[in-house]
Length: 422
Image 1 (cartoon, rainbow, N blue to C red):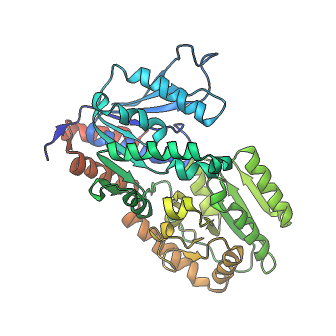
Image 2: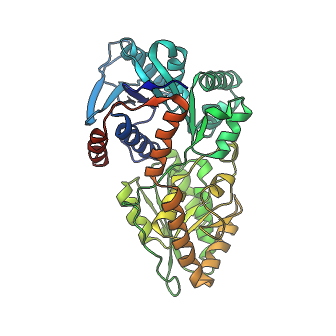
């Protein structure tokens, strides 16, 4: 394979940045890894708050310097619904791109990537599609009416397929997703599975306290989307309280309809006074909550989104890193991260009773939580750090794309110091 010198990398994503959500954490880590190795990254993200009164007016594009060599371009994405915002972002991003060219364009979804894939020859030398989710699968969980819109789903799938075929490298976070992509005809040689990671300096290890003779403190963190199984966490709390006093903290971003559903669920199971709902917090704040909890729950449901599309839930590996015992759904995407009864207790998906039984098992076996705590931390240190993910990403750029860095060893060290401080 011939090699090319990497002049610049454009990393574009239809996700707000910075943000407390997992997507932004992932973007931050990947941009750091690329910047440290190749020296120049432009991050292109949407701004959903309008700058102008009409989308027809010429927009204002903001540019921020995040670190030496790392620039963020914030493009307006105006509209009252998702599709309007996507089309707005595409128009304004296309105007920005008209006089620009990148050695590598790295995109995370068809929303920003499809126009770039169609204009690949004029926009870049190499194209990277980072498949974290496929809208043809994902959107119906956010917008249930999408499931009945055959025309929209057909268009989404066609755009996904075009991007998959145009990409020179496809990065994904789980082998489950990799298998799905191969079923859709993707050449396995183009696919690299790079799981999410954890910042071990933020999620420091702390072994669990003994559980006997005091109320149990449970924690769920993440989005409150239907596939996450937050309702199962609440129901398991109600079942557990029949045998042992306990409370549950729910922390994460939620829209009003999700909060209303959670309140109703708490009322239905008569645990309202034992459930606390907190907004999304920083990684450091989340690590503190992990250490304040006795058990962390990750009750993912066995939906197509989790079982066919695949994912790499940050909540699982962050819990494993922190040292707080984890109970999670026994799904293939979880088994890629945690070995049953070694790193976590894995239970039947969709069963609040199974979660309750696992909680009682931890109470009855005082040494079990400590065992899970230590082995899970060792697994994360060995397999799931952001440093490892960054190393694997750079290796994929070199091996699959044939991209070589143009910066010197001294520059590498300087960039490493600067980006780690952002």
